[in-house]
Image (cartoon, rainbow, N blue to C red; front, side, top):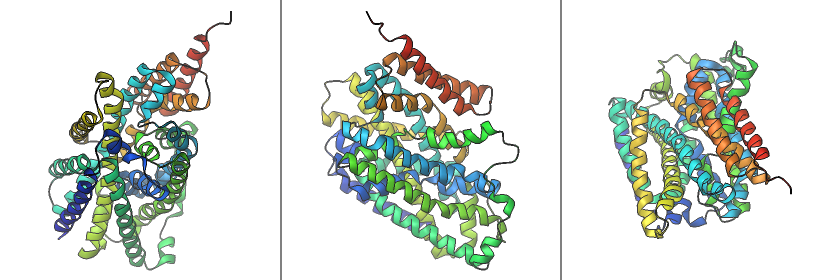
Length: 454
């Protein structure tokens, strides 16, 4: 029953993507929806893109294990990210008419910086896509009884087809449908969970006060800051929400849509937070890790309601993973392929964008098969290489200080620092250190490369 319902749901989504494909004639249509999105479309699409598998699956399991300390990234950190992106970046980028994040680097720092920024940003979106594919595979595994590797391959094939057809326009239309289904599914499980615990008062009383602390035992102040820095600053310049801002009708629309998305994200994010805090008190079997929430839902909900909830989870993941693939496609097509084929027309670039989408999906599958958890993949995606990109965007948007050499220095120093500090030496506060090193490299290079007055 569940598998059949999901199949019907997927068929509808693919139908919408097919409809959108008929209205897509260029790479701009495919990547930024022809720049015709209103405030509500921007808000719902950014929300659905950001509210992915790690929010509903990964963070619920983390909060169930760590308490409120596990909620610093989801929902609080990432909601703040959206708000800052709306206020600092959305209108500025839309006003300049960019198609991708790396377009800013070409405009502000030159073509070589554009190339480097795209090369560094693409792996981040690949890992992000892998996290969402793993979330989708976990859900399909619970629904069908098949192993996760099998459902992972099936999920990848589905997502590639779905994204290949519609581009951003199809993505936005389906996001609006998926957002509604997601909200219904989350509310259904919340009501059943609270009822099972004996009502609202009993449900609140079941939460151990020790689990309501925002810090984990034994954390240093550096680690506490780093826990916030990774979601808030690490994803501030992510291509996925930026693509929605760039698809808005106007700069003001982009900013307003981003602010509304942040508020919506925070409000809906309290529901998975409640799941994680209350779940340990429930007298049912719990799954482990990424299977925690779908297993819990299957134990609590009747078959009919579980179908609704499974559809909601599927919506959350699908709307995020296709956004990640589009982000990769946009960066690779507009900032790499276009440099190799400067004479290419819009039709040729559209074919290239769709081909790259398929290749990106297969690459994300390989990463998802690596054995990392959803939450672990998301942390990697948020911190890898983003320090230098962040420094360049903020400095480049709001000052005339620094040029191409500064951008190179910031991106490379941030990348080297996070690689050594996080994965070689396992230092506390690795991401914060990478931002500091990127900022220092940018500032020093800019200062020493300034032309001296005659």
